[in-house]
Image (cartoon, rainbow over all chains, first blue to last red; front, top):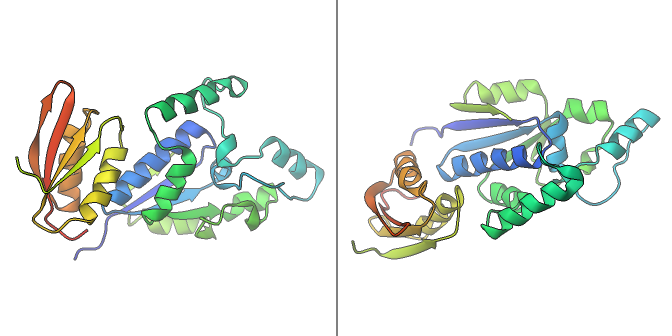
Length: 160
Length: 78
């Protein structure tokens, strides 16, 4: 059998709508028999942060950053019409009405379909986070060379 | 068309009918036909694209009163 086609998605954004779009493509690609890797970096790291617990970091600036940028799949705002949470709450309600999977469901589905999650070590270092700030679904922690090594073999490479 | 199994995806939007089809067809035998019922019109182009990609045979589809029925013959083990 021919080698599977490879798809890479860089999830740079930490907003609910962009995360959902990323997972919709990732999960569909995986269901089409493609080998999918999602690279989470910068604000996109918020998608894979644990929802519970306090983020531990050292230094005033990093503590402030991680307080303001708490992240976690349940806390992501919409990129438009967040309206202090009201817009996002309404969007989640509308999505529920048409039985769209939630972001948490999409993450679980991605793992079931074999999508690989790679988290960016540079972001972890810059923001002063620990690896245990992230959900256990993350397969590995790596950098740009890992992404490029995969992307050069990819037939579909996206940056969201 | 006579189908061996029917998958009801009424009320589901892209990509859920495709994801559910992936699961359902995984349980079926090669040569069997799956009928997928949906009301998201995207199914009419998404299903043949999925079939071509995975290696199954798209047997066609029909629309009636906003509901779509598409037929897939399982061709490969997936």
